[in-house]
Length: 249
View 1 (cartoon, rainbow, N blue to C red):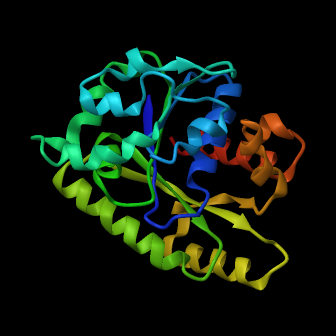
View 2 (cartoon, rainbow, N blue to C red):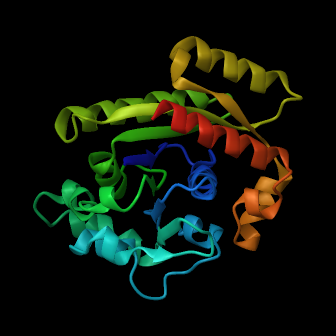
């Protein structure tokens, strides 16, 4: 089993979209997969057409087991622990507890017998929720938007990963950087890709996810893009990214 945290301290980089679609692709490929929504916006939850009517990822931070909380989705082999908006209060509550950064790691014990892949969709901040995810994960996947400030955002999250590795989780490694929202018609996208490749070499995924209307529309239908429009360029890119992730695991 591999536990992946999807993290970037910069918002709007396609982090949740990547978490939902990689999980859906691997599940379709026959891999038992769990997606845990740790973002109070709950976009990964709604992106699968689900809602948190009862238990949620907040309960993971209150001593519940991930195996107990996971629920089936409409998609074979894909289970979800949804988020609710009250998750935003978790950081304040965790601040008053001892060993607050390790609650999620404890909650994920026992998942290795049930899942091949676990994805943790983190908020776009380095708060208690993201730190818990990094302390629990084996690897970090960093989605990076093809824009001018990409390198700055990557430097921030890589520094945070190194700090968590040194203090909380020495086994934590970087699975790679995935370039998202790539507009192949622009020079900017090519320049950003070249800069990332120059600085990070093999850490950069070969697959690049295009800016796509189909990817943008899919969440409003509660579907990953491979279920919304299987023949679209976005679906093809996420399928290739999922297979590349398997090769890197």
